[in-house]
Image (cartoon, rainbow, N blue to C red; front, side, top):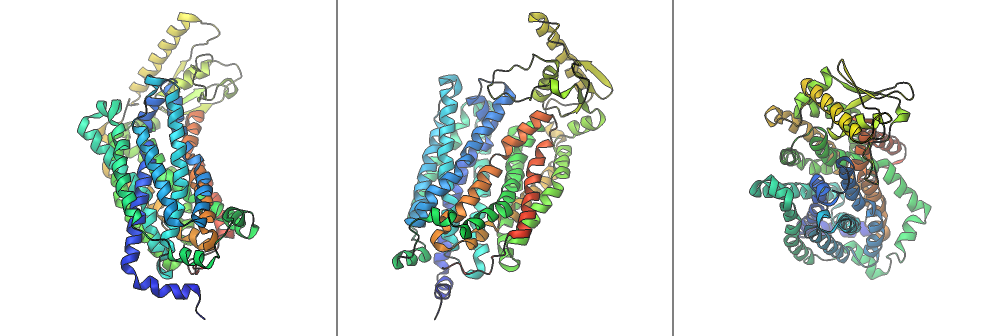
Length: 556
């Protein structure tokens, strides 16, 4: 007697036009959702000024990244809500709902009043909309990946689902193009003032087109057959995670594949973008163009590695990408600094900056309340000035109670002691200290911003493309792997939760965590320890416990 998989296989091969329509419609719709979701990340610096202007600049940017991460925080909850709905009602209707929610939230960001207009209510509403976006995306990806996989031939599942894997990067690429185009048309000043809203408002048009395309799809044949036979799960959440036989695979998938994939994805695309703009001081428009070019070069490799995984397996490609990331991130980002801001790299090499002080006498250079002026301790006066100027420094331990000193090359500057000067005298002393340090930094070659004429554009693009290629290695085969780990009756729910915990928490919090680590230590490269640590964890767990899945029959 033929199995379900054997009965389905001829239908798969006979319906090539249907397969293409499924891939196209699912991919276009998912591109739209990623476009919406990542607009915020691209415009984090501007959004920081628009919605978090009530705090100091460094804290405001970290707050903006935290609001970016808020959308990721709720993605696992969206995975549970919409994954359950997808396993009970169907794949098609669930991702129509998620698309509508995403479109509404994105459009509303485009008309949201700023902090200057309505005060603290502005960032609160912004975070609420990010949470709604996160819930919607939590239900979208699992539905699209499952839907495509259940239409795919057994020997082409990696190839077919790899088109879904391109959608996150294509969505980011589309958002970059709209942002670059708007910036070019209206100018940088107008864009910072009001033009940043245009890409959010444009999403209403994309929503209409995407909804119309998705409405043309039929339900997944595997799910439809299961529902007609009455074999679908009545309680997918408890069956997926309350049963250890299923739950253990969700845990292994998370730690042995998705966590590493997530941090590689966000390091290679978003952290690289933020690093260029905030740490290397490359202007926003140039940064967007450089990232867009790298994405254009690297995106076809999602499909290549998806295709390759159908031949050699999912596991070796994903774990190799994680291992390469762990080994090469530090040299890659150092090379990126040398290429994007060579003057800064030369200055750091010839006149390194250090702060000589007892670490116990210092505050962490991140203020969650937004009211700390960092002028109550000599250490804070020194470090806050360097952090604001994106000057990388090391810490040299001194005796407890020692007044902080800033060393630039061979020169040493002593910070004011707030215990001995107060009021206007303290302000004047701080200003004089900052002027001296600023002059010394300038004399040592530290630039106020990256010089566009000195940027080694081919080398920057080469490094960024390498980072994107690592992304394609870990991300191209991941959908097929997750689909193949779980049975049809709980697949939408079971694959969505580990995917969105990995990408929502391990990956989504990466920019915030990494920049907080940089702010705390002063070392602009220190944040890379976070993705490297997660990649090492994934390689170890994946090697020991993750099964190979590429020859599995999923039609059951």
